[in-house]
Image (cartoon, rainbow, N blue to C red; front, top):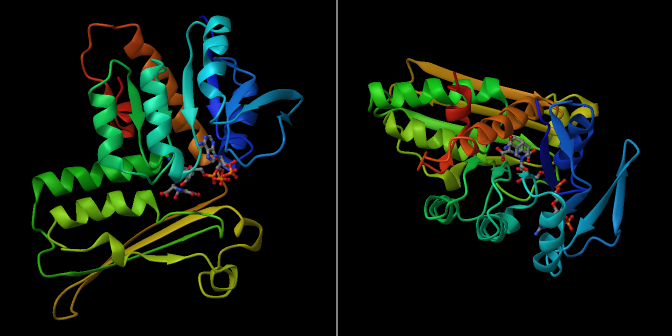
Amino acid sequence: MEKINIMINGLPGNVAKTMARSGITDNRFNVMPFSLTGQEIEDKTITIDQMRFELVKPDVRDEKIIRIKRQFNSFITIDYTHPTAVNSNALFYTQNQIPFVMGTTGGNREQLEQVVKKSSTPAVIAPNMAKQIVGFQAMMEYAANTFPGLFEGYTLQVSESHQNGKADTSGTAKAMVGYFNQLGANFDVNKIQMVRDPEVQRKEWKIPKEHIAGHGWHTYTLTAPDGSALFEFKHNINGRDIYVSGTFDAVVFLMEKLNKPDDSKKLYTMIDVLNRP
Ligand SMILES: NC(=O)C1=CN([C@@H]2O[C@H](COP(=O)(O)OP(=O)(O)OC[C@H]3O[C@@H](n4cnc5c(N)ncnc54)[C@H](OP(=O)(O)O)[C@@H]3O)[C@@H](O)[C@H]2O)C=CC1
Ligand SMILES: O=C(O)C1=N[C@H](C(=O)O)C[C@H](O)C1
């Protein structure tokens, strides 16, 4: 089978690096030696496992992409950049007809979805690519659609802990709140408790020392009005390796969609990817 060209955007960021390391050794893919990066990055290149990537800043990307597209006439992009870049990057991909997997959280999510829906460019967008978490989301979606109001009157508490540099509230937690609200919880996403203090993470949350710099821990607690019942759901992820497999499945999924050009649907989630036959 022909290798799929992938461009991993967001280097030298943490998740983009994890994707690059795994992509280089995955024989389904040909990792392209370019990565969209932030305007402030000073280095012009970065080397990962002996592969050199040219870092492409926002002010030169319009010109650069013409040359990249000449060199690689078909490719799929993976975006693990910054919440402030989500909407402009999605616009860039759709304008240049580059199918993309958007793992980056934050930005204006409604606008993000609209841009894809109105375009001719397919994309998989999800705040969490860990397949086991996506499976949990699918269960929540089923419950929300099948038993709306099941937790009417219950009080919901949501807390999430991530590495200190994380810029936004957990996108996963926000998505989960959507399901809990369908189940009757009546919770405002602005009430999600964000923990970014390494000392609290180590001492109170007992997050292993070696993962303080890279983790995503989430707890959702539902308490009955009279306190007689409590339901708690947790997903605690150390490191970033778990996101690789789902992201790469999403790339393969998009490639299959591109090979079926009659499909008018353009916007997909990781639940669609998980449901792939
Ligand atoms: N969907 C999922 O499963 C997962 C999603 N994520 C999300 O992925 C995103 C990245 O996370 P992480 O790697 O930890 O973050 P980092 O801050 O480590 O990396 C982000 C990188 O993106 C760069 N960047 C900034 N602006 C742009 C731009 N316009 N175009 C391209 N690159 C840009 C940053 O540069 P600079 O430093 O100059 O700003 C930085 O190098 C976050 O939104 C995070 O929540 C993370 C894990 C899993
Ligand atoms: O920034 C992270 O690290 C993560 N971000 C995603 C989110 O905001 O939900 C997914 C995961 O929690 C890791």
